[in-house]
Image 1 (cartoon, rainbow, N blue to C red):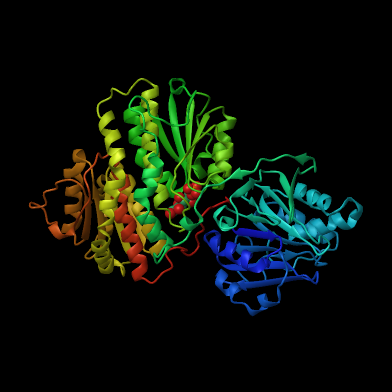
Image 2 (tube, rainbow, N blue to C red):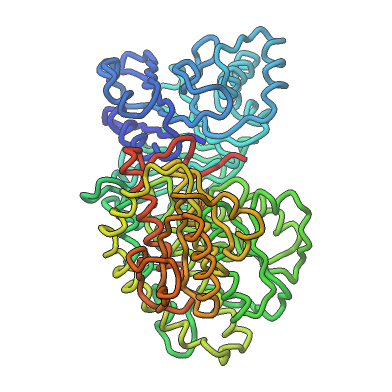
Length: 612
Ligand code: F6R
């Protein structure tokens, strides 16, 4: 996965391209590069290994005075991270220059085709295929023009791509095309922008076009034209985006992740929005959907978003009265699931661009299932493919590790479960009104949980040198543990596992020895004493524990020490994931900071996984 930016207008292109790349660094950061068509008509390319700031400080940029350019930040897929493999790439004759986000799956076939036609590839990347293919078609029939050569080349590509093409032959044009990788076009006055996502160019414009799969855009400084891959013209509508560009900056916090953790009360409040504005009916944009036609439901997502599904499965079962399965999109898409028009499929995604989730969504639609998506990024691919969309209003999430998107997803899924119950005439179920008050109280309770940051920092200080860490809990507490454990491993690189507390004694307890760290979560009175005994069992085997709880647990008859308990605000166990995850997010954050790691951009990870 990678990020792309483009600019055409009257300003100097380099600062716009660098700003865009800095904002897109979450998508990849092993190398970065840009190409600018200078006023002398010479096309100059500058690349650097590592972070965008290396490129930004490269003195070669001083010689780039042009107002047309494309840029790229890379997360290596095919071809190791290296200066040679970093984008932009050109064809053998240096006529066409391309940046690309995605993967060309028929690389071997196209490489042989090009070799048979006298082309040599100089990098290990699949991207280098693209400018050479364009050149091949252009040299065969230059009268048809460059757009035609691009469209012929695109038709040969299998896989995913968002590309930008420039050439000294095109004095005032950038060509953009897309299939299965995101790209937006920002419209200015006498200038136009391209980016992999909205925040990268939000400080320049609020007016956007969303390119769909199999579409090409031809940008000049004062026009944007759209075509399909056969070069038939297409009319597209401009959308006004209201996100605040300031919200995409750090606002005085050391890192985006910490800022985003502390934004959770506001993000949750915004996500609840007007859902409970009227006393008689929950308000969600799902008019006309009759839930009585479904006999089961699936929640499908990846990573943290999938954990939000696991955390809310019980609410759907209790209130919506559906058999609810939660599945990883990467598994669901290949396992021939038993779904049909009587199945409700809910997809969760912060970015709305996750390749596996998109494939699973397409599969569900092919089987005739109704699809509702819970998405954060407005206008993203998943929103355009789904029958219904509910937005989490978390605002831009920049840190790679997801925090506020998760708590907003759990909140919105809980509201959806209530909406379905109401739609099915089940709002008299015990606990329905209490759940509503609990959801409304979430922003304040999360705010109180955030006050624990300093004491959690102390615990992180005691644990940051550990090699392993276990998280245990039952039912929703187990789902919370899975998310806490994922946060710790992804940003602190400490090996960590989450277990259903009752499963420990079936094998894993063998790993517990003197000094092993175990975090327990207890938010459900029904199983409070059970998890407490599991924690006692690990303490007697030498473990150091941290217990996150909102229950009045009595540890006097156990070996657990009172000072190992983190007390969080009380709430129903059904919504406790939103509150109990906060200390776990903070623990992961402070642990990574003690290890002096880059919390916003952990190694090997990218913010949105647009390749399989
Ligand atoms: C972990 C994390 C990932 C994402 C996953 C799905 O902190 O962020 O596990 O949750 O890649 O991404 P989205 O929600 O964009 O589909």
